[in-house]
Image 1 (cartoon, rainbow, N blue to C red):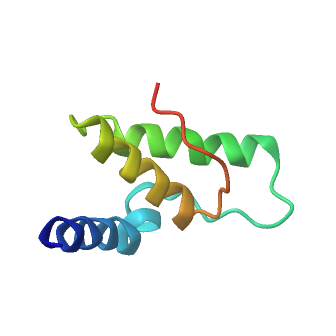
Image 2 (cartoon, rainbow, N blue to C red):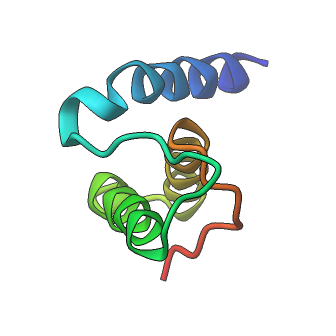
Image 3 (tube, rainbow, N blue to C red):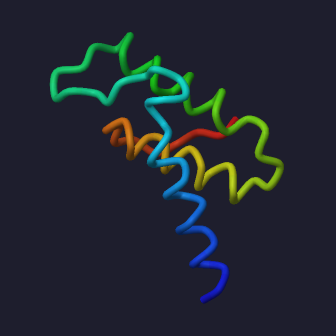
Length: 76
């Protein structure tokens, strides 16, 4: 339970500052492929320094959610 609380807190810290730090805006319903790719690239840049594979995936999923990108992340 303690781990979940820590993960939730970590996720919230990314949620609050996602757009402020990198300038990538949330996607609208009619987003272009170029805008979607910006969100993918932003997630990669934001989460590439996370060493743990599971934590990296959580980081990417959170980033996608904050930017309204509804697809499974690829952490390759």
